[in-house]
Amino acid sequence: MDTAFANLPEFEQGWVWLVGAGPGDPGLLTLHAMNGIRQADVIVYDALVDESVLSLARPDCKLEYAGKRGGRPSPKQRDISLRLVELAQQKLRVLRLKGGDPFVFGRGGEEALTLVDADVPFRIVPGISAGIGGLAYAGIPVTHRDVNQCVTFLTGHDQTGQSPQKINWTALAQGSPVIVMYMAIKHIGTIRDNLIAGGRSPSEPVAIVTDATLPTMRVVETTLEHAEQAIRDNDLAPPAIVVIGGVVDLRKSLDWLGAMGSRVLQSDPLGTRSTDLTA
Image 1 (cartoon, rainbow, N blue to C red):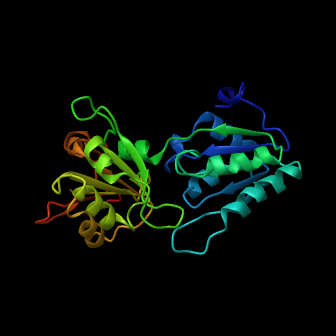
Image 2 (tube, rainbow, N blue to C red):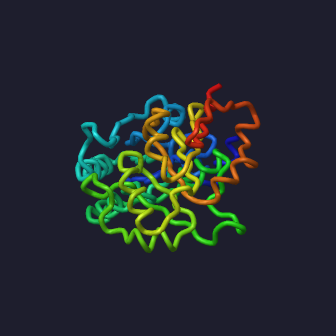
């Protein structure tokens, strides 16, 4: 295994690596991510990084939690960014570990710009975003040539914590056959209303994937009209990915994890199907 790391970059003192940890399953880490984790003096990690990933660090590596979760006390983004600068200026090898990809709704750009302002050298290590990898584990491709030629990724809340106000919902509803939403559970009712008002069909298929790629992953299939109720009925909680569009129907054939042993928990008059992969 060590031969795979032989020609990878050395993590130099005083550098910050902004690293995507992928959606959860440690097997989805890149070699560059693993290389950084193995060399880091300190890892500043967010709330979506699984413990199995952190366990790959050196025994003497310091772990600092910097998670931000909606509705809970969280460090301010500015403080996190300045902490990276402070640690780097101590000549430590600082690895900022973020769930998914650091530049996909991960505020990695904000942190990188702070490093630029402080003249701190850094490296970007992309990761598999949950909006792609998590859906693939659920048996849902984000694109399929018989269904869609484009896909839109959006966040379910803006800087204020409210449903995004700057989105042209009518253009989105009519122009993107597949919509993948991060952090959308809290405002799914408002998002549903905006999309339907913009012309989206209430009966369009929707899937909600929680704990994507982890052993605790759950997938609930429903419709746009009933998405909010399905979330309540199945007691779904973040982290979650919500996907709207015809690609959801492909899961009937592509649910490869389900074929390996998951079970359907319930089927109800709303057309909701819930799959628990912990069984």
